[in-house]
Each structure stands twice: as C-alpha cells, then as structure tokens.
Amino acid sequence: MAFPAALEVCRSDLFTKEAELRQRFPDHLVEKVLRVREIYNYFISNPVAVDREIIAEMASRHDVSKVTLYGDLNIVKSLLPSISQASRDFHRWRYNEMILKAYKMAEKRKDTKTMERAASSYAKNNRVDLEDEQRMPYDDIVVQPFTATDDPSVLGIKPIPNIDQKIASMLEKYRAESADIDDVEFEEVDLEFDDIFKNLNEENNVEESIL
Image (tube, rainbow, N blue to C red; front, side, top):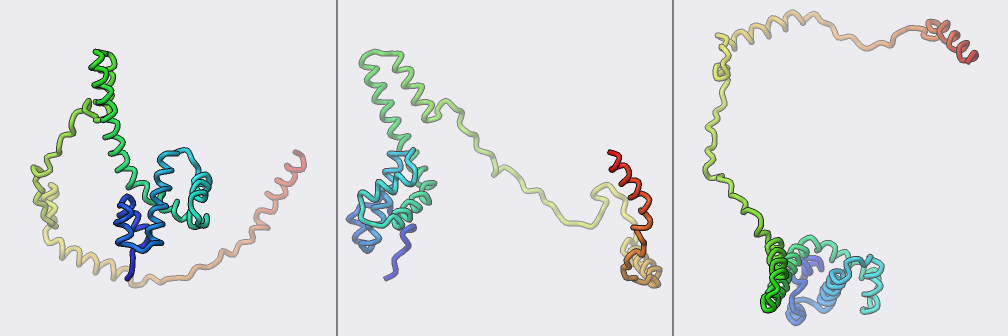
C-alpha cells in the first residue's frame, strides 16, 4: 500500500491524535509527524530560537540524525503559512477569554478604570471599533452589450464610400511602383580612418604632452 509523503501527512494530520495516526500510517511516518509537531510547538514557545538551537534541542530528545531533524524543520517552515492562520484564530480566542476574565474580576472590585481598559482592548482585538465593510453590489452591475463592428461612424467618423475597393486599388498601385526596386547587400565603407583623422590625433597627442 502506497502512503502519502510526509509533508502531505503533516499538512493534513499534524494535530491528529497519535492513536489515530498509528491506525492509518506506518510507524516511521507517525514518528516523523510527531517530531514535526514537537518542533512546531518548540518553535512557537521559543520564537527567537535559531535553526541551530532548535536542532540541538530536538537532537537531545530524539535518537535520529541531524539531517533528519533538518528535514523535519523544513516541513515546519513549509507549513507555517497555513498553520499561522489557525494559530492566530486560537490566540485571538484565548485573548478574548483572558480579557473577559479580567473584566469580570475588575467588575467585582468595581474597578471602572480596569473595566474600561479591558473593554477597549476587547474591542480593538475584535475590530468592533471599525465600520463593517460594505458589500459591493456586483449583482447590480449590468454587462455592456458591446458588439464588434468595422463601421467608423460609431466613433463619429464619416465612413469612406467603397473603402474595400479603394484599399485594393492602392495596394495594386504601390505594388506595381515597387516592382523595380532591387535589394542590395550591405557593403563595408571603404574609408581610411587613420589617414583622415591623422592630423587630429597628432594635435590631441600634443595637447596631452603639454598637460
């Protein structure tokens, strides 16, 4: 049975329970997913850690080569754009919980200043202080009935009568006039530049020697 690549499994099942992973995938693939998950959690907890520090920490936890760990870290970096969006939603929810808890504690103490700050922070985090974006009425936009035409009168230009025949006659006329034109090949100009500019070069040399 063919199994998907580690990156695809991590993209779809990074936070799936270990028991379920072991039911669906071979052990070596499950171990990799668990390591990638662990690296991700460490990365979130230590946002200023550099790659070398992350690899050193994981090497102390797992008996695998550093090459394998660097591969795991690359998977984490590949997943960060999609994971970060989910993480922001989670942190926004947790922030709301903390602010509401602080508001309730301040309300019990009748601390109006803290209540006001908590309410302001809650509003800013949830962007309730901004006006809702108005939906553009795209359904009301009528498509213009454009029709292709070769009639210049639609632009206010007076059409030339029998234009097709005039074009044909002019083509025939100019083709006949150009029939005697001969194509010639490029030839190098036969000029002795050294002799022509000899005096000028001598004057320049004299001026340079004076300077």
